[in-house]
Image (tube, rainbow over all chains, first blue to last red; front, side):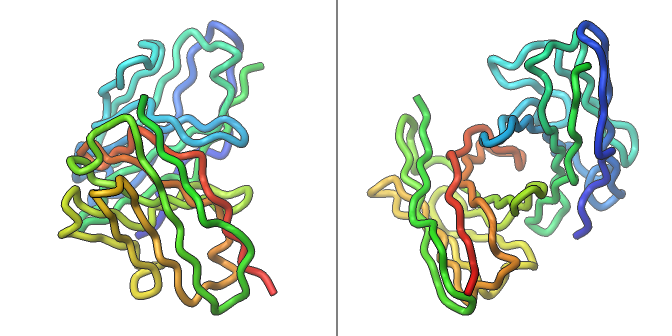
Length: 110
Length: 118
């Protein structure tokens, strides 16, 4: 399976909103509602931010939201805060008991 | 609180083997699927393998099928990853992660670094 496509970088000023895209195919993102998003700060383990396209785990601020249209999923971070600066990865179930990740997006809070 | 702690990483020669362990605490280990995800230095995340709660079902990424083996010991709350025929491209931090369902991972360990080098 090929990795999902994410923009290498994204940025926004504090208080602004930013959306990160994650493009796959009908065999992964478009075919299943098993898209997740992870936040990873340098030197740390990933943290689950969104699962099943748009669900937020307990403790994740509602500033983080997820959606999907066709073969593209999106993570929106509203009201950007400095602590949101991190790498973000999407993942999707790809059928046949396989999971594929995106290449990651480095979010910079200006 | 949920904790996953990996161990067994280190430097290994190409072609050799290594076994990673992931010791869990703070949750009912035997009811959760578990996975291994790796991250090469400066690179993105790559799902490796997963195992069902009772150990009866195992899945592997094509890149490691036949070389890596996942297993678990529900009596001792431990997950394992046997890495054989290691190559330089296997150099990475290996994370164990809990899978609550729906192919997401809600808790991760701190990672174990495996370096394959002569």
